[in-house]
Image (tube, rainbow, N blue to C red; front, side, top):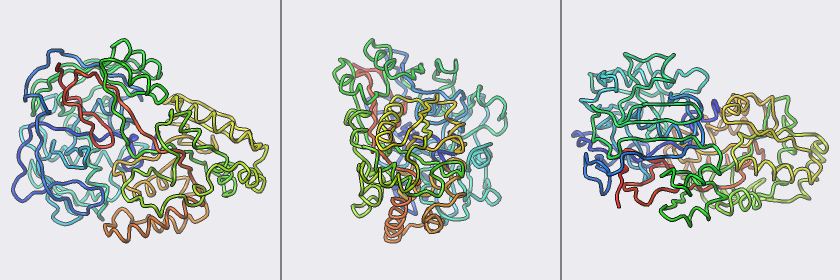
Length: 541
């Protein structure tokens, strides 16, 4: 859904960083690396290693890994993909400068070192001897081109809004100096989403169907909404993956994935919440349940055509009418918890004083909801609610529909498919409410509160008025450049207070995610925000 993944939300976002361990070179003298979501200057260092329990360059007994995918946007261009599924697969084809692992550490890929000359001047040393799949050498010009494209994608927000492309430059073939107009606390992690393209051969017309990356695999077959096949390529700069072939089957229906696990057709699959307990009983699979700092959320359209435009009482009425405990229990089989603030409690910087304010303090209260609905003049007025058609959203929409019907507000639910939702979400004049999520790669309150307000739905929350908007935008104007923890805490408190009263969106529940994977797989280790590096996996007994 365009612009929903503003800055680094592609995907949602979310959810696309993963640990990527390969036989890397040592960090050059004087260069540093590190993790930490809110640290203004990275520190510490590490080099990539071979997958645990898998000797470098060895080959598994089985030569294919079968993975179930939940969605396909119809393009192999990672710059326009969303969600973990196909994007996670394409990160085996395209690489980034560095990855972030599950503990927030920096893992070198196409870069071998990073020196912060100043907080806004980053000098990156690039790996030598790397070629793209078509044989072109990887150089600093490719990084500069990829930075340019990241900030100039048609219909998408800039990947790095404060990047100064005019001042950024190649110091030599394998050193690039990247300059920003101001420091941004999310950029260290954000570079894990900068896919590197070959400047020399790049073609905007063919990139969606003919990928050319530096990664360990190359595409051998792709049928939209059917499957994607990858094969380990010769000439890769790192260790050859132990598993030769990756087969990704698109299985949008939850029942398809569960059946595929039951019958052994797939080795890895996202597990739907309603089937989680059942899948945990399947022999031959391990189930990994993890927190990815994501909440399911209901967004209100503040377009002038919507009933919620300049109508805070109407938004508060809807929030009070929704039984979030029922959503957790019915839509997610109890795996999760009702939200206590506008973003997930799993984000960095969440403290107790931020919880249970405004609509979150009111909680599920049909009597208050009915009173507010009457004051807002929305009783009897039909509200249009849209979803992307995923199973949990369909169930949530039905629960919300029932809750609002109970206080005299009719709701028309419009369940779209993933492709249609991407465009319809971007036109808030077509609906009153939509179901999506809150989630950002840096896992910080700052990026959540800045990005979703600023860029969501063609910037509707910036363009149109709502109570506290001007002060909110003032607080978020430079929040990504704030490194002082006390100042951040103070801003967070005020932002949460404003947001919880105005309710431009209502966070429903904090979610967990789950993967089932074949118990014979070795090297399984989730990366940052629950992503998988398939090139680290191997077959064992």
